[in-house]
Length: 85
Image (cartoon, rainbow, N blue to C red; front, side, top):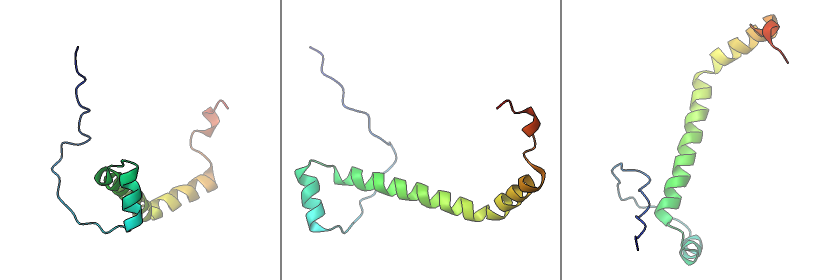
Protein backbone atom coordinates (compact mmCIF):
# COMPACT_ATOMS: atom_id res chain seq x y z
CA UNK A 1 0.00 0.00 0.00
CA UNK A 2 1.33 3.39 -0.99
CA UNK A 3 1.18 6.22 1.55
CA UNK A 4 -0.04 9.61 0.43
CA UNK A 5 2.66 12.22 0.33
CA UNK A 6 2.20 15.23 2.61
CA UNK A 7 0.57 18.31 1.17
CA UNK A 8 3.10 20.74 -0.29
CA UNK A 9 3.93 23.74 1.85
CA UNK A 10 2.03 26.83 0.88
CA UNK A 11 5.19 28.82 0.48
CA UNK A 12 8.86 27.97 0.42
CA UNK A 13 9.65 31.52 1.50
CA UNK A 14 11.75 31.99 4.64
CA UNK A 15 9.71 32.41 7.79
CA UNK A 16 10.26 34.58 10.86
CA UNK A 17 8.91 33.94 14.34
CA UNK A 18 6.66 36.79 15.43
CA UNK A 19 4.88 37.63 18.65
CA UNK A 20 1.19 38.30 18.20
CA UNK A 21 -1.18 39.18 21.01
CA UNK A 22 -4.65 37.71 20.59
CA UNK A 23 -7.60 37.34 22.97
CA UNK A 24 -7.24 34.25 25.17
CA UNK A 25 -10.75 32.96 24.45
CA UNK A 26 -10.13 33.19 20.70
CA UNK A 27 -6.90 31.20 20.98
CA UNK A 28 -8.57 28.56 23.16
CA UNK A 29 -11.47 28.18 20.71
CA UNK A 30 -9.07 27.92 17.77
CA UNK A 31 -7.14 25.16 19.54
CA UNK A 32 -10.38 23.29 20.34
CA UNK A 33 -11.26 23.47 16.63
CA UNK A 34 -7.77 22.32 15.57
CA UNK A 35 -7.13 25.56 13.71
CA UNK A 36 -3.50 26.21 12.81
CA UNK A 37 -3.08 29.63 14.39
CA UNK A 38 0.03 30.55 12.41
CA UNK A 39 -1.69 29.62 9.16
CA UNK A 40 -4.86 31.52 10.10
CA UNK A 41 -2.83 34.61 11.02
CA UNK A 42 -0.91 34.39 7.75
CA UNK A 43 -4.10 34.12 5.71
CA UNK A 44 -5.63 37.08 7.52
CA UNK A 45 -2.48 39.14 7.08
CA UNK A 46 -2.27 38.24 3.37
CA UNK A 47 -5.87 39.39 2.92
CA UNK A 48 -5.22 42.67 4.75
CA UNK A 49 -2.01 43.33 2.78
CA UNK A 50 -3.88 42.73 -0.49
CA UNK A 51 -6.68 45.07 0.57
CA UNK A 52 -4.24 47.79 1.64
CA UNK A 53 -2.29 47.51 -1.62
CA UNK A 54 -5.50 47.87 -3.63
CA UNK A 55 -6.58 50.92 -1.59
CA UNK A 56 -3.14 52.49 -1.97
CA UNK A 57 -3.14 51.85 -5.76
CA UNK A 58 -6.54 53.52 -6.10
CA UNK A 59 -5.36 56.53 -4.09
CA UNK A 60 -2.10 56.82 -6.04
CA UNK A 61 -3.99 56.61 -9.34
CA UNK A 62 -7.07 58.61 -8.35
CA UNK A 63 -6.22 61.57 -10.60
CA UNK A 64 -5.77 59.37 -13.69
CA UNK A 65 -8.96 57.43 -12.92
CA UNK A 66 -10.97 60.62 -12.49
CA UNK A 67 -9.50 62.06 -15.70
CA UNK A 68 -10.37 58.90 -17.63
CA UNK A 69 -13.90 58.86 -16.21
CA UNK A 70 -14.38 62.53 -17.12
CA UNK A 71 -13.21 61.87 -20.70
CA UNK A 72 -15.63 58.95 -21.08
CA UNK A 73 -18.44 61.03 -19.60
CA UNK A 74 -17.78 63.80 -22.11
CA UNK A 75 -16.98 61.70 -25.20
CA UNK A 76 -18.47 58.28 -24.47
CA UNK A 77 -16.68 54.95 -24.66
CA UNK A 78 -13.99 55.01 -27.37
CA UNK A 79 -15.14 51.83 -29.12
CA UNK A 80 -18.84 52.00 -28.23
CA UNK A 81 -19.92 51.96 -31.86
CA UNK A 82 -18.43 48.48 -32.26
CA UNK A 83 -20.32 46.97 -29.31
CA UNK A 84 -22.69 44.20 -30.26
CA UNK A 85 -24.81 44.27 -27.11
